[in-house]
Image (cartoon, rainbow, N blue to C red; front, side, top):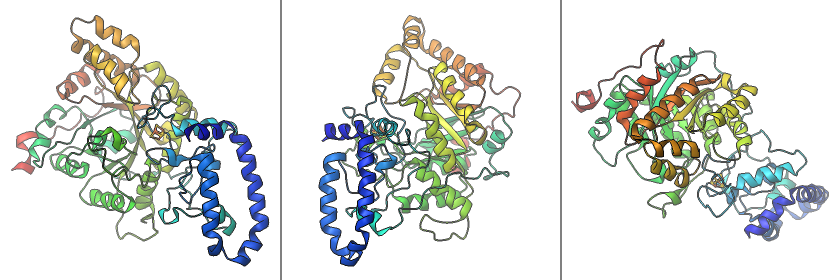
Length: 480
Ligand code: SF4
């Protein structure tokens, strides 16, 4: 089936032409089908469509076909059902993050689009599925001239005034180089377990990301941990993935987070379930990162749920996204960022940067599109502490690129931890000199004690307001 699917993408130009011819036939048949009745022909037409498109595209009959906008590669074959891909986990050989034996559907989509009339994937993002149409004929939907789901906004407004009033927003708006970091939620129901390691961040970072079941492993929820950190005096960036909740639960959680004082929301698609420790769980992926951003922006700017129902109070949230300049298809990455910026992202945190020249090329494309003026680019960094660990990351963590020269440098070092720390400091200093970069996102899981020394040695806090030093740990009022 996959071979036939790839054949179709290779011949996307011819398939597209046939599709346009089919459209003309359908237009001619419209009066006849209207006379017979659309509902009466639904079942036989849907059955025929299932057979034809199933063979050609491995079609899942989602009822909202977007093949002409995805290079004739059906996005429903993406294990994360991404309608605005690719995700950041594409492997260096183009393999899928979740199913390594399969080529990323969105790499195929790009290839197919290059053979079609427009020669490239459209900039306009695809809306999420309407599940009530699953199994129904998309051909008949065209014939009925039923509108497709409303398109996502093409350009979210850039606000002149602050949207959330947080300190992080103040620093970004005033072009101070920011430092963010992240903490992993514990496997515990005790708030002390969140706070015991926070002293490593106090006074060194402007905001702390709270991951949302990273790697598809269950932990304390990002909403709960964000609230604990916020009450302890930190500014949390609540991460929200699309993997575990549908749009109803997502919108409810966004409102709850804002009502509880959370000011930053980072929108991600999320890691595939198969990579977690409970692969039997149901992957939801009702939205993807782009449609999640659009949903949160509508709640904030329009005061509306996706359904169109009105809110009585809007959530005041600064919206962020993630991006990976270091995963293929490299030329597509600025376009993907542009889609997220259009959907409302005003800061973007990247995957680990271990290759500064690669980042420079990405930033040149970002600057050429003026994206850095609408969205603060915060580059991911972190210390590698051994050659073995660096190799493991390169081979086992999809989307992480570690150049061989760094591995060799760690291998030669007498003290690899000190050398890895030095490399991280040098990387931050190089990144800071790149035009358009707004800050660094320092990730040091299980090495949090290195955060302070790295930030201090990099000198990035000089000449700007110092990060606040909350009363974390045992002195936190939350634990009193
Ligand atoms: S790499 Fe990501 S975007 Fe591509 S098919 Fe796999 S899950 Fe989907």
